[in-house]
Image 1: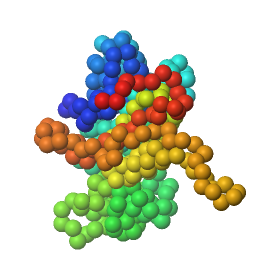
Image 2: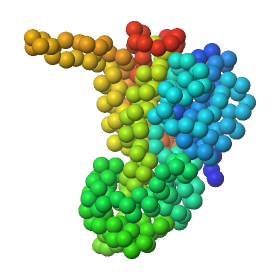
Image 3: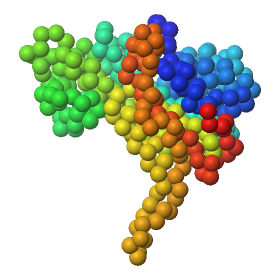
Image 4: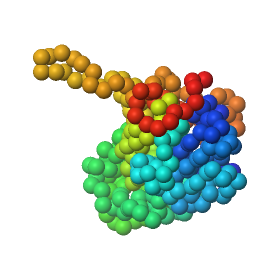
Amino acid sequence: MPPHIPVLPEEVLHYLAVRPGGRYVDCTAGAGGHAGLIAERMDGGALLALDRDPSAVALAGERLKPFSGAKVVLANYVDLAAVLEAEAFGAPDGILIDAGCSSMQLDQRDRGFSFEGDGPLDMRMNPETGLSAAEWLAGTPREELEQALRDYGDVKPARRIAAAIHERAARGTLNRTQDLIAAVKEALPFVNDTPAEVRTVFQAVRIAVNDELRGLQQGVAAAAEALAPGGRLVVISFHSGEDRVVKNALRDASRPQRERSADGRDRAVRPATMRLLTRQPVLAGDDELRANPRAASAKLRAAEKSAGASGGKGAGDEE
């Protein structure tokens, strides 16, 4: 398996404002790439690395062994508040969420995430819980599958592809990644080579199986709530649906909550809890793209917890 290369590494460290003695949470530890970079800079601080994939927890644990202040926990970041309480971690000075599927997972054919090669049609971030992709597809009505392909993969011929997938599932011949590829090809017989839609169909099914967008929305909200005043939240997304969730969540948190009173006046009922640090997403530069093509679709957004918002002791100053 090729070594894992974390995307936007310098940008992550910059926007997290990692400092000695700080307290940080990596909500999606993966192989420990970003977590290791944070641990190297926090000098005397504390790092809590979460992942819901048991194999990722094992890899991140090995990567972080040299750092006494780092701990890896098997957990879903939607449960961040409960994890912080269980670990008596306090309010973090920085939280990172690197959304989506890791290159490590894509490289493991037996996980079913990749359409390159063949493997069981699984796609679960945690293979010990929930329905596999094959099970989800077998139990999902055609109309619901069609909508998932549109919403999560921007698949244009969603009706044709959903019908072909549904037919294969009904025949009991949708158990491996090559079966899903075959269904897409059957739906688009006029395409000579492997249709480009294969990639977006795999993406859409993976997102649906893991309920990723709702989880991301909940995770961003939980992270914003958990931060210490002045703490930083950094989120990396890889496709338009993820980025839209992050952009909207951070935008809403950066605006006062308002309501119209009985006399018709518009008034603020809650001040903004976050301050945007990135008006537009931060993208990878040319040097990084040459070294790590996966970074091409990465978008980073960041925000800082308002000083007057609830939370623990704050993070470092603005850079």
